[in-house]
Length: 556
View (cartoon, rainbow, N blue to C red):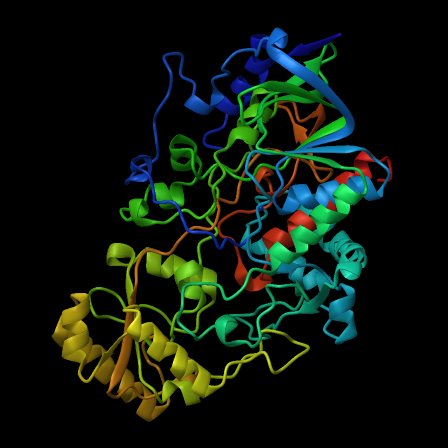
């Protein structure tokens, strides 16, 4: 006999979540504005009995209101990257699949996947030292993560990427390796792949050059990849239900999760039964103000937290339903934001804060740059450079296998002039004009630039020790722009899961039949989302989507 979750079964999950002190990426859609709940301090909202709003079970949906029941081997909730990867793995391994997606189409963001030693990497002889890279990843997180899951990603991600490459090859897509950087401090490990060959492949590298200054991403190859995989899983018999919103998980008398009750666009309830399991792939919780303020204190407790645009559109619905089913949140209560958007393409000659002072070695890594900017007055930084900088920049090819994917000085200047016309950049003959335009103290700005030019002359940055070869004198006429609070692409924390993607209870036992992958799954990040492994969020999505499909098929 089947039953919906009872209030008693929810109580197990809510009590477990309550014991915590505080409990997929890249995005390219327009960010949502920060809510009032993130202004300055973490939310303290609780109900009369001390529960947080997301812990409150809304009550059973009456089975008599369910219009039909659809049974498959697997039910996947969410058709972003992780859900699509899981669906492809499941159908390829002989399982019948139903996918529920509340939107009208799949959700695709970015396109970079960090995986370990895939065929695209091996082809160029750029294998990564797995032991070193993983230990570095764990060190960045202070080992406040599930080391077994991290090692699983390292040991199986190349296999997963090669498997997906074979699946999408007939659709004209193939993986290529992105550039890496072997500098010890700003190191970007080799291993980042993206799938090209579709409509979103650019003609050249200008929009992907890290010095073009634009905050947009020139292309989103994940669209092509997920489009091909969607076509593939449907050709294999998967039933994909758009405009269907998961409302509640269903358990049987033994406590096993066996399905989902979802509402369609008309508000009609349908039950989707997954005889082998239910996979939560609904993303994170950034659009739930209470959850975001509570779980992401890095933003919530910053005086400029309300200024941070939130790219991820997840509202925590899948996470909440898993909690109501007896799951718990990860133990580490400080979920780091994936915050580097403003620093991705910033012009890195001279960067100053609102006081007119330099505050960092301008060549610092993206994650560190964003963190430093966010902690400056007003979370703002101003970039200043000149036309000569287009010739002084290192030409970086976005693709490691094709050096033509790099911007020329002429392309950079054309890009910068276009951004001036759009009002994003400005041109100025004097530093006083820049100070007036961006409300900077003119005397302090002039003193900073004079000091910097002195460092350039002597070949030694006495303030922040930028490498001598990257010290370039800053003289007018100038380009300049202002970068306001960096955006957060996603909050990197979620449900307590093991390396098999099983959602765990307060007793550290799996909630039978329930899995979570992608940004809904926790235990993988702490302290910061490190861009030393560019695209590691999508790489994790691909790896565990692949593995959970095999797990449900009995192959793991």
